[in-house]
Length: 75
Image (tube, rainbow, N blue to C red):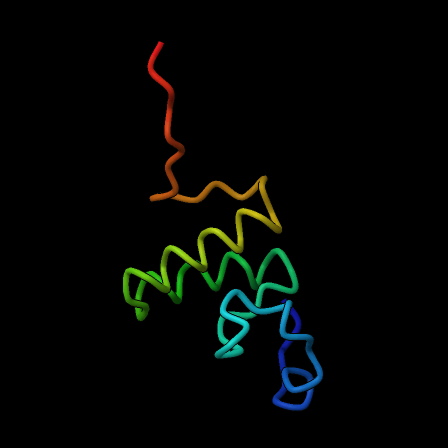
């Protein structure tokens, strides 16, 4: 993963972050998305965890995310 400098981070679009209002947890690359999941698991509250998991899943559906459940319909 390439090092993200403060200058590079400032140039990133808000949509490149899992929490765009805070510009937190960059998910511009697959590696940073995986890192964002790890960081939010360590330091985020339950609301942030849910938002980051959803953002990562939306952008990178191939990444397996623990704690992300889909509701199943009963037959």
